[in-house]
Image (cartoon, rainbow, N blue to C red):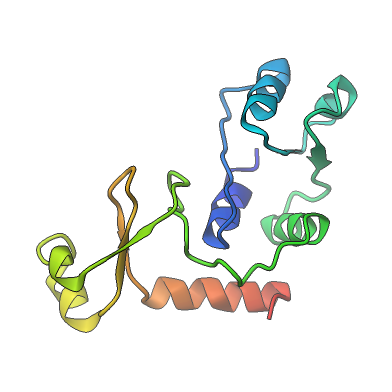
Length: 144
């Protein structure tokens, strides 16, 4: 339901999981165990329990959703941008350019200087057009 929001929260450096297989009480139990806030569009969860904290998302549009979470949780969306893996949520770690050789396309290796790797899924990231598009989108949302 909020998978795209979870990806965008990770892009701005938030520890955000998305486990659609968990519903109702199982989701609340999991969040309580991990000390997480539940962000949902499911009104039934609001009636179930208020522990852990639950943030009901008003909009169906991810930009509005992101704006709501950033506001409600007092997050600086640019302070920790690109510090988490957008796929698996682990904190990324810097890697040397030389260790990226043969693991990224040759053009990327010759044109980029900085690389980070996800220690969990081994995905490698580098600052390129995707970074620029994300920053532009954040500006359009109103985060400057």
